[in-house]
Structure formats: C-alpha cells, structure tokens
Amino acid sequence: MLKGSMADLYQSRYGQETDEVLEYFYQLFCRAFPEYTIRRGVPASAFGGESWCAPVDFLFSINNRNVLAVCICDRNKWVNKPFRGTEYAVQRAGFQYMRFIRQFSNKPDYVLARVGEALRRAIQ
Image 1 (cartoon, rainbow, N blue to C red):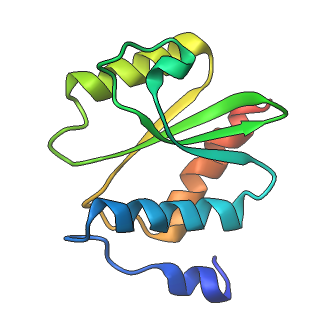
Image 2 (cartoon, rainbow, N blue to C red):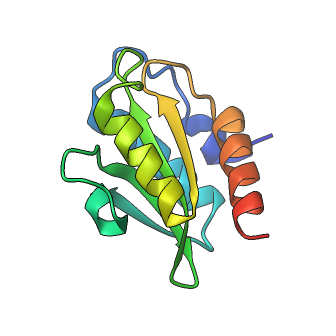
C-alpha cells in the first residue's frame, strides 16, 4: 500500500495527454525505485533495435547494466510493428520488457507491484 504523497499522485489517466501519463509513471518510478537509474525516451537502436522500433519510455539500469525497459502505449497500438520490434530488441539484448496501456487506470499499487517483481527477477 502506498503512503502519503505517492497515493495522492494517482488519478484516472483516461483521456489525459501522453506527456501527463509519462510524467505520472516517471514520478512513481523515481519515488519507489531510487536505487535505479531511469532514462527516458531511449531509442531502441541504443540496444540493437532497428530505427523503426518504438523508443523505450523508461529504461531502468543498475550498476551500468540495463535491467528493464518499460513502454507506455495506446491500447490499439501495443501489437503494432514498432512496439513488437522494441520488445524483440530488448529480449535479444538480455533484459526485461514490460508495457502499460496508457488508457487503463494504472493505479500505483498495480504498477509498482509489476515493476518491482520484474526488477527482482532481473537482478537475480
């Protein structure tokens, strides 16, 4: 369960602009996982992807090692070629991939549980 200001950060994201949604996720991640470096808007070519691949919205790394790529996408586009290409590039590069759908509620407890589990698996 989230405490204080982190719980206050949440509100329904439906209908909000992409920049607002990305900022919401970034704030969640920075507050919950301060031990990780979180880079934003990383092109897939940075880890072997093609130029047509979607950029990674959040790339988590620790000790200069990429461990988790998170993409935020629209519900009708997550299976499109650019996102699938990024997913395959991440897998080939040897780290975790995860996506969230921008129009879904993405409550903090849900988001942080998924990301926390993926990070635990990634560093084992």
